[in-house]
Image 1: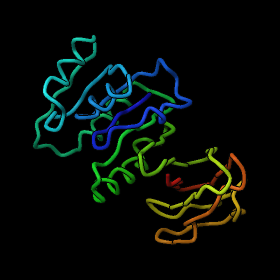
Image 2: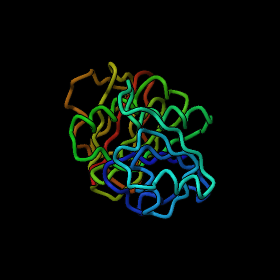
Image 3: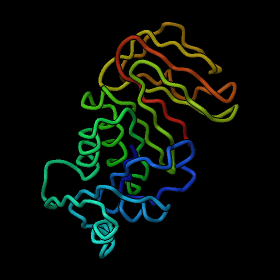
Length: 207
């Protein structure tokens, strides 16, 4: 499942390794971002205050569905899109796009991705500034030797972390919330494995 957020237009490079027939949910101006990299939008959702004129109509003309919400609401368009995607029961959700260059949006989205609401699905975000992977039990990260990988615990402590393929390994260790110990680790090869017993980690690979 692909969810395209508003903000920065995603790069076609972000589609690497994703199935070509993945269902696409677009949040507001994410419709424009999806169309820019050749994706067909199955569901467009939001208030469409930042989408281009006719964006929602183009989705409907191509056989997709549009779900409109008022501008004054209690959730962002991306949160609505993620909830709609989750209702379709995917095994994995990959979020493309950005946060519009706003730090508050970036931080809100990062915490949103780690929400307990999405505990039953693999979640990753591919942004222009970084790839963010949510780790609840185990994840495999890919990249180039020397790439930076930061491990940040969210919503509490991350317990029993074990890593393979990182220059500074963790061996059944805990990271409390607010620590900087996991900042700026490094891939020693092209893949790394991160696992933990309890809690939630965000692994951040800056571009």
